[in-house]
Image: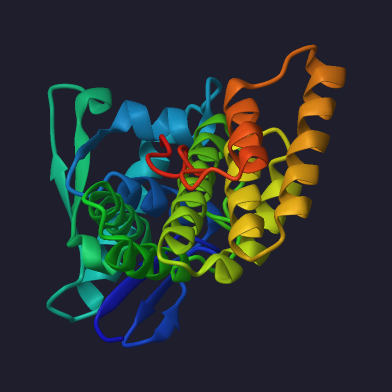
Length: 268
């Protein structure tokens, strides 16, 4: 890996020529992260202030932001690499209306690369090309190095970003599992699906995928037991039985050849 790279899908980090570079104190790093997440889009001073300090910013907030952005711009220029992002200031008649745009290619920021790869995987899956979809999903998931935005404090804004990214990761893992089942590699999907079921016990699609993987691995009785247990749990806890689980149970019980009608098209 060469050039300037930014990593947000785990501990926040900047690397130049693969060497980690310190980007300053926590507030400055948070400003950089906000600009990186909105790459090539203008972010107003008012928006930056609210995302950093919430509804109770200090009187010196605007000045502090100007100082942080100044140092971020200087540091990016000091990298001396052609693909280094640059921050452009868009002045206005008052400080709140002014804005900053961080210009960069998506390839140097892991969040944007992850979204690109997920879109590619979804497109291949929609066309029925499960093998290429798996390649895209695998590449996307390899970008993750831990909890997203590691080292950035908890706030409404940052926690919302973390939740959105985790949902996208969850969707990528489900889609990958569906494609593996589709190409006859159910055993490769199995471990990930058991982990997803433990982390997301009320996601019926994970149960459907896991039951399909068990069936395709030659363990139809366990697949039926899984579905029966899930249906009983839903009935006990929620006084209802999801229709998708009922359909999957009936297909597997009847031994139908098309016992996986819900494998494709997980919604983001």
